[in-house]
Length: 348
Image (cartoon, rainbow, N blue to C red; front, side, top):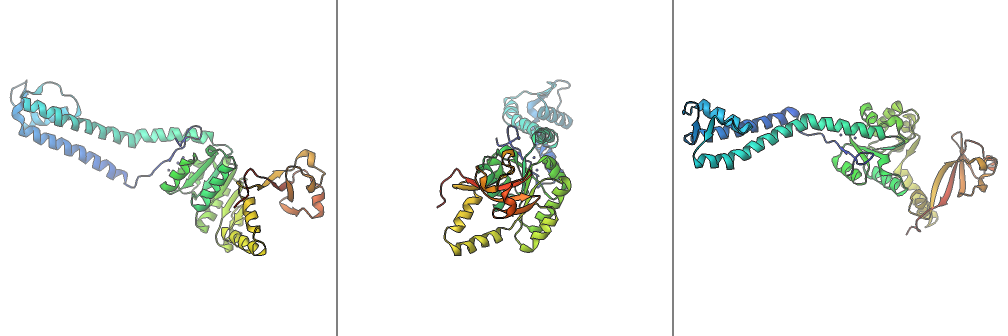
């Protein structure tokens, strides 16, 4: 995953992977060049101050001796066959060469970490996160709609570790990560990315990619990998609502149309739009709730439910209003839409 990570593992913290904008060969080349540049600098200064060195073998310092002394000094602590003997040479080794030696080793260690250790660590953390991803919610796109969806999920009591946010923006992922969510930097239209977040084990998916065509393609990809997952998709063009459903979306939301409904409702009464918004959010005195019919409710009318005010039944995906004859007898398998008591205050 880019599953980029306290905020991170699903069990203990979130995680994040950032893709470097610099090609790997460029990254390696400048590191190697820097190392050779530093060695060349030390070599030149050693050659200039070679009178401060002593060769215990033949008491003569040649260029080869200086090259040898430079390499073993920069990369190790030296072997003692060539040593600095004057105070100036020893001071040069202590104050100039030693920091360069440490810096060179840091470059080597940093390169090893970037090329090997980080990849191993990333895969290990990735495997841990994927193993813990069960019955989670996948949110693709963390723009305005995605952020509001996650905010509402958290307000309704969803554990942030049960939410995985996929986006291509580091800034958006950092915001999601700050909320405690798992995050993945990648392209949700690709099978591999959705497999990385265990889409086949997710309980639902929210698609808000910012572009209708991208959101529909993500829906097609997800439906291919997880045939039974409920998918809610945001589309902004009314003409794309039907293609979104044909792509496999179970719920299609058009924020523009919904805003129009609120505005139209407000013309009939100043409190209608406010009440509708209150129903949709978790912070008001009322809230909409969907649940399966309880065993003790089978055979009773919709009006007899005690957990809220029953307003609709879904029977075999067919909506039934509270006024229709079928609502007078609840059946096994029915889904009840009810207005229940919220835990907040009246909206201003």
